[in-house]
Length: 86
Image (tube, rainbow, N blue to C red; front, side):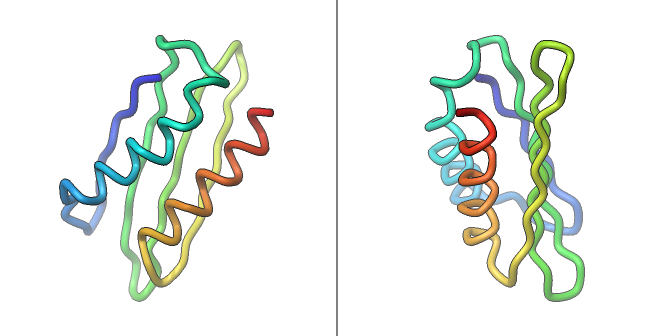
């Protein structure tokens, strides 16, 4: 799975990128290598939000999670997508 990461109102640090690749990399078993995951990180006031969109076979898997900590948001979105992928 290919992962494309962008940010709105946030500097996407190498630490954030590494965490996203690690967490979403666990989902490789559910998708083909050609599948692209589009990840958008954003900060609005005190909310740290991650949106993940994965187009597959004419459908779209999408999850959006927010919390006060971006790493918590990343964990939450990975759990949701894994449940959908099963």
